[in-house]
Image (cartoon, rainbow, N blue to C red; front, top):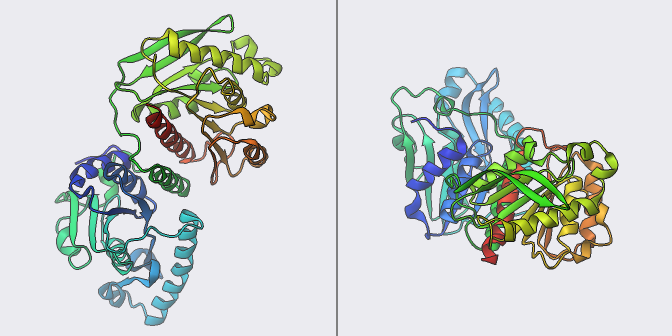
Length: 441
């Protein structure tokens, strides 16, 4: 069995675990690679998502060779055969444990922040990884869940070696593994895309799941099929005809208009990436050029927030009244840079009834003094390395009176080009729009 990536593997694994829905499940991903898999399982089961942090204990002179593992709460598993064959003394083991305990605690703080772990007492703990090789980390993770009071522990992975059920006996009450190939060598050989998962993606997945849990219902569905409508359109706005790209999935819950201040929204690779995530989650998208090419070359026009808002307002009316595929659907705005300022200003028009707004690296300060008029729930997403814009967003958030949240993506600069950071934005946006689109229907 070959998986395209961890998300697809998670969706397949979730299908096998559907029977656990409604049984008080908590899904626990092993960072980092297990978290994208676990996130899909948690969505399908409508269950809380958390992490269980474990650290491999490597042989001192051959660190890639595991002689055991440790987990949160003091859980430890040692492979005495490996330790003896490698000639590792008890003192060396103790030193390795002390060293890894510090790293384990640091990672747990990084992933959870100041939040406490999800309570497991009496619940079904589903421990998820992207695969099992030796099983030492998986066993320790199950022990951690057991120590924290889980009434039942299920180890769930997309792929593992033959005999995994026997190997995990005593650690897990049940093992669910989609594939146990005879010639198993390494987990990565069963994924087309097995690229490294960043800490930023782990944090974003946990934050998106927390947003979903606060709403009290499952998040956007995965794998929505291509839309009934998909193609180029022309949007009449502000006396101009602006080219765009419209996608509307079947049974769309809403439509998101993208506002890109530099003009080329429909060609922006970042906007197209985010749009694809929203479309898979069952939302329509309109990517269109707020500015003509000659206007985009003029910095004064790029910062003409009134102009951007006026054109976005006309585009919103087109979605509501001039396009059969989107008529009646709730409308949201996804704005970037000065486009985010235009989106916030457009949303002050009560006649538009904008349902939700997401700003990526936006400039809400450009509409300071009008922010209190925004009533649509607003999510501000800024990279931790985009310090000047982060400060501007913090000040702007203080002016907002609507439901709002500011999420800082660790390690991201203004363009979110760092690995995993743009996916973090896309996941957060999908959860935010889904929450308010579903409430408005």
